[in-house]
Length: 161
Image (cartoon, rainbow, N blue to C red):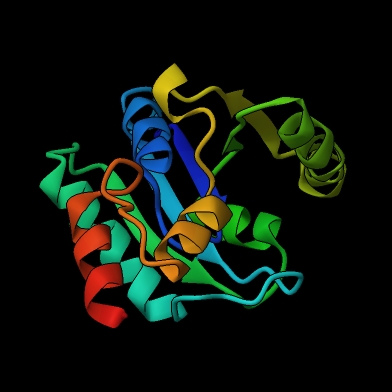
């Protein structure tokens, strides 16, 4: 029986903190699904298909294992995707207490709805202060985002300006 987990997020854009969590989670599971989800509470900078492409390229460039599947999901609840692929665990990267406060109710609902457990993972300390929204702000003001995102993402953001 395969151990399958899902790392969901808007990944708008994917950061080095995301890649760190994805890499460590991939070592723990036989199959890891990185799922780009639409967050109706946010206005996205990057189209969904671009986010999937950038994550796929960033994972390949980082030399991560081939047990990672990158997909998008906008057809229902995240637990529906988990059930579809046979995942029993959702992995969420958390940086601080605000993330814990935000993620805990969703973790409880996911467990109640479908028996899906949530595992919180901390990023490496050097990435703990970086968020996608911070990267979007720096990029919008034409700042250097290279310390915070994979090179493929920095190149894309610099070209898109």
